[in-house]
Amino acid sequence: MINRRDFLRNSGAMALGAIALSGTAKAFLLKDKLPPAGVQLFTFFPKMDSDVKGTLQKIASVGYKEVESAFSMKGGYYGMKSTEFASLVKDIGLGWKSHHVLGTPYINPATGKPMTDQQGNAMRTLRDNYQELIDEVAAAGVPYIVCAMTAFGNTEELKTSIDTLNKSAEAAKKAGITLAYHNHDKEFTSLDGKVVYDTFLSEITPDMKMELDLCWVTKAGVDPVEMFKKNPGRYPLWHVKDIDKDFTGPQPVGTGVVNFKRIFENAKTAGLQHYFVEHDMPADAVQSITTSYNNLKKILG
Image 1 (tube, rainbow, N blue to C red):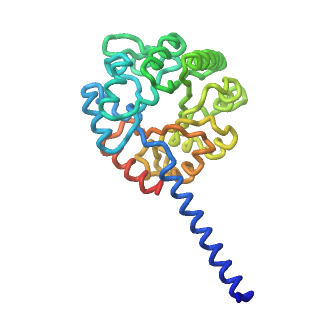
Image 2 (image 1 turned 90 degrees about the vertical axis):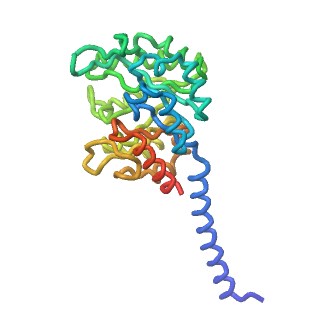
Image 3 (image 1 turned 135 degrees about the vertical axis):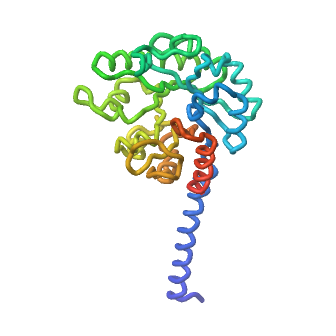
């Protein structure tokens, strides 16, 4: 017969076991229920243009399974049509999940003029070419098109960008894909008495999702997890990169101050579907994404 002392002792052991099991289950979910790691190809800008296939093969050899494309100096999709690039990516064993475009023209600081590709063609934008860009991405079977940046330096620029993003989100939905918006840290400054990022969230249709850059939001001093809680499900895409303690610039994952484990533990609240490792203009892109990949495996268990 079990006495009271034995019952309490056994109950305590069971409770401790449950706690341990809960931790194991949490680790299991973190490791095995997340989407596979991807790479934002801007990490290889502009070197990728000289060897598109070889660069994609290097990314796959590290262990990455998905990619997000970006601007190419060769024009189009690294000198190809969207469907041609999609075929190449698939042949290498990667999934093409997202493509970056501009909301408004990017003005080259050196010339004061809109940036062009090698043929002298201006970079296409959602403001001027939204239907064309959306149709190309949809034709390639890519589920997301992302506004990489847009102008909001004054009230009129902000209004134009909001109008552009709203009509682009509607067109994307009709095409069977989703528009998202990628942040830097500047979106967390105020214009007309309100944080620009908050204006985007409140004035742009919920059909537009957000791609949260974990480096820049950390630099801005904003908590990603609190953002997920305020707008659950609106963050299906992330840029996963670190930043140094002095906030001077991006670093490989696990070499800076971003608390990736806590953020990934809240992936379900965010609505995470895909995440892309990125490092802006690294000295050695392959080394950087390899460091990030290996550190992510340690962080996620």
